[in-house]
Amino acid sequence: MHANWSGRARPIVHRGAFALALIILASSLGASAQQAGKVYRIGFLGGASAGDVPLPSLREGLRELGYVQGKNVAFEYRFAEDKNERLPGLAAELVRSKVDVILPHGSPATRAAKQATNTIPIVMVGAGDPVGTGFVVSLARPGGNVTGLSTISAGLAAKRLELLKGAVPKLSRVAVLWNPANPSGRPQLKETEAAARSLDIETQLVEVRDPKELESAFSAMLKARAGAFTVIADPLFLSQRRRIADLGMTKGLPSVFARNENVEAGGLMSYGPTLADLFRHAAV
Image (tube, rainbow, N blue to C red; front, side, top):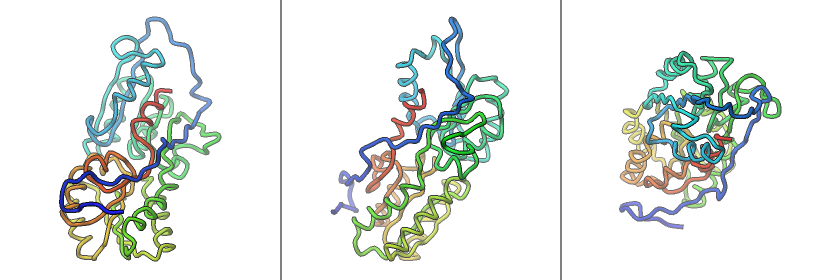
């Protein structure tokens, strides 16, 4: 396997040819027939910005079920623009606006929504570890007002490192880019470190909570002589995908991601569920 690190050659892609998602069904959110003439209001809560999530896929999934924007469904959008500290206030706004359901993307947004209400149904999309983070009691019987889809990110973190080792056989030290503010990050981090030990690879943890920290993060990778980097799934790293890809190529560091959107932006490879498919299934 090889790739041109200095140019803009089309990157080699490794990703699961599937949309791996765990659909959690909460009995308290029982389906009901559409009420004639009613316009259902969906509150979308995102940690990044509108251009970083496949909202058209969500609207397409709803349309297939007979819910058409402007006809019988309307959206209230709230985006934190990579500032997770804004999520609780934005979630509270959606609650005050009396939406019928809240759809948060990612674990930080799901946590904010769950803290804001225990009565409005919450359909999470892309939460990494819903049980470990306390969003649901169990996968079989989630309870409460939370349902949705999980990417089971922790279960894929080790595989990403294995693929990176396959692409860079002499890899002995890998940087792990992660956001400590994301509650689902630690399970992924734990599995990545375990996989690294089994592959005889040293890990360098690089924390990034804000886009302004990316430049110094990559400088730290080079200073520690990392031979590549892996990225723990987080909405921040999705929104900053082009900058991360550019920094990786500029520094000559191979990379592996959780999202294929990162590869389309210039990263080397990814392994994980397709975000557009998750959003389409969220409609169900």
